[in-house]
Image 1 (cartoon, rainbow, N blue to C red):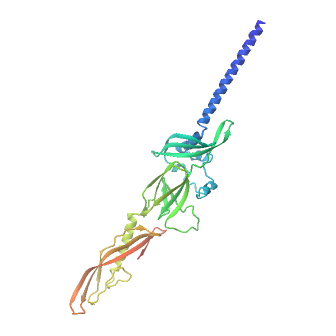
Image 2: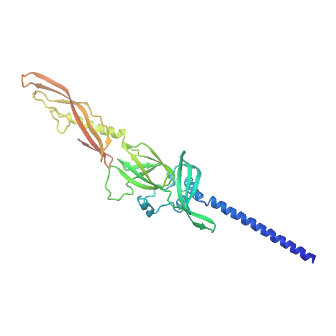
Image 3: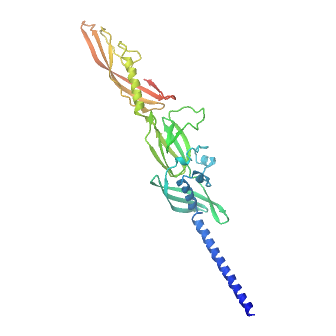
Length: 346
């Protein structure tokens, strides 16, 4: 009888011990689930996963997250171009994203959260706001999320007076995705999907044209406008100057008072006794500005010089006209597809 009571007591203690352990394990599991839902599986944790992927240049991981890539309907609703090229959604284009710090996570309506992060873009402080939506749970306990608004940006790039540019070292052509029958234009535009947050450096640098480097921190989804102003280089201006000088040099060969198709000449009412000899005393200085469809040199003054013997019709006196003759000339210039310059004088 005593042995039976002893066995029952041990069994009871075992049951109680198992129950207590089960309660403790259940509590620990519940606490772990709660902690994970507040951290890794929270709205802020979801956004943090996206930012961490960008920081590691894991573009595939970032793009795989729900809601990152906008649909054409999303783009249309935001009045943005559709079927955008993904040329910039590659690891080689990404800069440095470091020092990620969640600042806030605010539930603005049931299941809809606004999350704010601070970070450094290529060493410079910046902030971005994200909107995420809960989509239920997975594994029955963890909260699932998606971006309610895609965090990707749309870079709307305008290249003034050119079509080519570089972004973070990648060479692009705005007409690469244009319709085959699209007309050539002096300035060009194109739009690209791009990761945000990220810093993008734009420029154009060629023999004939160059632009000031442009660094753009992109810290918002949707449209970011970028304008690259490609202007004539010293080589371009020098070549136009040389062409203009050559044209004027050909004008002075004609020993007439009014060289044909030239911007200078002189009218003399006396009798001309010798062949006029022309020279250029001062070439017009080429200064190019962008016009509607070409680079323009505004009407600019130059000086030709003439030496010619004359005899007065009034009293018969002979003299030498040795004087400067001012003239004005302007021009338009474009770069042809073969790289040569097309110059139109006016």
